[in-house]
Image 1 (cartoon, rainbow, N blue to C red):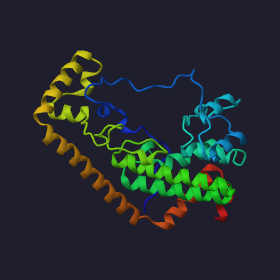
Image 2 (cartoon, rainbow, N blue to C red):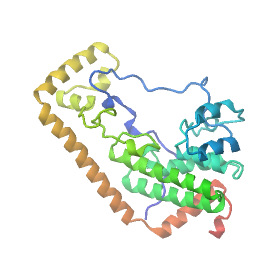
Image 3 (cartoon, one colour):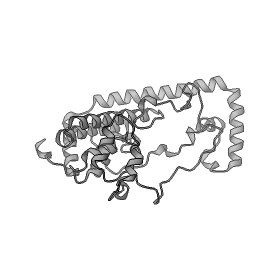
Image 4 (cartoon, rainbow, N blue to C red):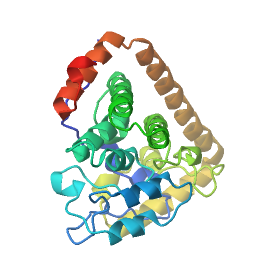
Length: 289
């Protein structure tokens, strides 16, 4: 039986992003949010809900920062959201005023639905179970809290999109939440998806270089780029074929593992998982569901 994993999430081990850089780019340190930056998630109002329900982008992030807020999810350790396409934000908006701890509920929902991206599990089986538990929780929220049909539709659209996003990430695609249709393969360029652009990690593997040991030494990176370009010219076709084959093989393997894990899901266990989530989050009606 597959059960949800602990709520103690960990950082995605794929955080080191040098492999997504072109060989002409020196990787920089990941951006860190500072205390001076404005929080993107505030206590959400009916005005904000209207923006989400609008079919057009009407300057959501600019408007959200104009409003006076009494708190934000970052203060409670839940992180912040900067895109209204994210399921966490949609849940916060539609649960505001209906659930006292709406930030916690929104965070837990996003953690489950984006299990791979959020590092909420370590295996494909755990990611599949977490995502399914997230769907059950979302359906429960619609039945008991987000009862307006228009709100429920937008909310469930975000839920389904979050799942697509997380599965694409698990398969190795580069994609932003809410933009699954724009997903592209990691060896390609976002602007030119048909152009093969092997990663620094691929070149380092072929040439025997240690990227972490190179650190921010510009001289070492200059030598690495020069060696990589020379070797790439000499092995262009063979290496391109290998890059594509590696991705395709990995995508096929992950797809098969996801399908196998889905087939093994236990509905009775999922029902128990939902009850545990309802109790943990302090939602009403758990004993009646």
